[in-house]
Amino acid sequence: MKSSRTVAIAGLAAIAMVGSLAACSAGASSESGKTELRVATFPPGADEAAYTAFAEQEKQFEAEHEDIDIIGVEYEWEGPTFAVQLAGGSLPDVFTVPFTDAKTLLENGQLMDVTDEIDELGYTDKFNPIILDAVTDGDRIYGFPRQAYAMGLHYNRTLFEAAGLDPDSPPTTWDEVRQAAKTISEKTGKAGFMEMTQNNTGGWQLTAATVARGGSIQEDNGDGTYTSTIANDATRSALEFLQALRWEDDSLGSNMLLDWGTINQEFAAGNIGMYSSGSDVYTALVRDFSLNPDDYGLTVVPVENDGGTLGGGDIAVVSPTVDDTTKAAAVTWIDWYYMQKLLDEDAAVLDAKTLAESDQAVGTPVLPVLDRETYEESLTWIEPYINVPRDQMTPFIDGVWDQTPVGEPKSKTQEIYALLDTVVQAVLTDRNADIDALLAQADVDAQALLDQ
Image (tube, rainbow, N blue to C red; front, side, top):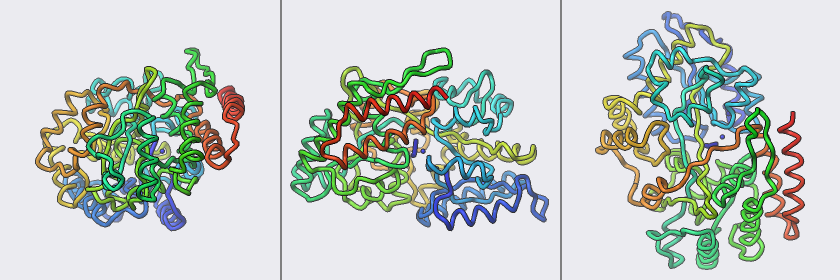
């Protein structure tokens, strides 16, 4: 989830812009006879350098594909508003969605079948089969897995130093996270730790914390049905951790209504010591929120009781309403813009060089959608252009391979995340919140969703 990881055109201005673009129906051709292809770019607020890099990439693509005219559209995925935008037909022809949305979209017939195109490009056998499963229904494929992440613990090295902590030795257990958060809060007056709580991100992060402690919020029965397991010891422990930081240590700050965008903004501004999110968020922190790279540190999320790290990502998809000509153009763009740099040295170098020349992040740690060998080889291709401070991310880069990746829940994922938002908010806003009662009710409500 993105955040990423979690699809809406954010802001009224952006919605108005997309609405006007919608008048250019899918598959529309310009006066020059080119196929106009509307493609997702960045969230509103991205820095000018990001658009400079995109403009250069657009120029490179159109030089190779003279029959396609790329039209960039500002775009941001947000769980609560995605369905409205999709139903309204205001999304670009090519956009991205989290793995967690894929199942629902497939069930609703809202993704374009690209099986033949992926087979023709030769990608089918190259993807990590676990990741490919997110966009597969039977033997048909409905999107291109283009990016994955593992959960990471992001921390502010400057605040660590100000609090007398060693930024090269970040916490390795949840008890150490709690102690570091308390120390940072006491020594700097900033929030030692912060938690996402709204727009489905509270449920996302509670699920990640559950997985890290060896639990799960949902059981796949193997027959197309699912059982809610929210009321488990690991989820209870995760909420008790937050309860302690909030009401005993006073180290969570004062804003209890944060989501992916607002917590990134607070972190980039130097107001947060630590928070958990996808490992790939550094790119957005620099591009969209003007993070000072010197402040940044990344380590693995602590795991216990045979827990793992929640993994996710997103897929590049084609609107199911486009005509065959636009579909062909869309697949050509997805292949060029998202996929080739993962597999082809020349494409990887061109992409990295273009981004680096526009001061965009190159080399952010991710969870490969392909195999580890291919991923690590690709890093050698782009080594001259890597500008991400990977030495400040060593604890994650070295440690993530020792953790077990765990996929996000498969059924009613976003709806259940939204349900769990309220649980997290209750614990952080009510000193006397009854965690057991909250979990028991959430289990009942989640099961009702799963039984629909």
